[in-house]
Image (cartoon, rainbow, N blue to C red; front, side):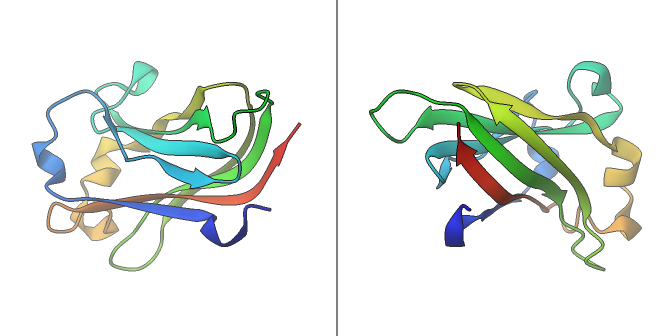
Length: 137
C-alpha cells in the first residue's frame, strides 16, 4: 500500500488561459516512483476538439537499484466543486519504465464547461489521483 501519501490534487487557476496542447503538474512521489498528471484541455488523439483528456504519468524511479515494473491501482478524478459529484475513473496498470496512461475521451468539453456541473468554477479546476495499491514486480 502506498501509505499516507496516496492522493494528489492539482489546482489549476485561470484554466481558460491555457493555450498549449498539454500541461503537466509538478512531480510528486507515491511508493517507489515519481508521478505527474497530464491534461489536454482541448483533448488529445481521438478526443481532440471534443473531450477533456487526462493522464497519469510514471516518471523516474526513486531508487538507484535495478528498475522493476510497478503495478498501480488508482482513480483519476475531476472534482465537482459545487455538489461533490466528482467525475472519476478507476483503473489499474503495470507501469514499465516511464509510461503514461489515461483517457483521451475522459469528459466531453460540453460537460466540462457546463456551469451547473461544477467542474469549472471561477475559471478554476481541480484534478486528482488516488492510489489504492502500488507494488513492484
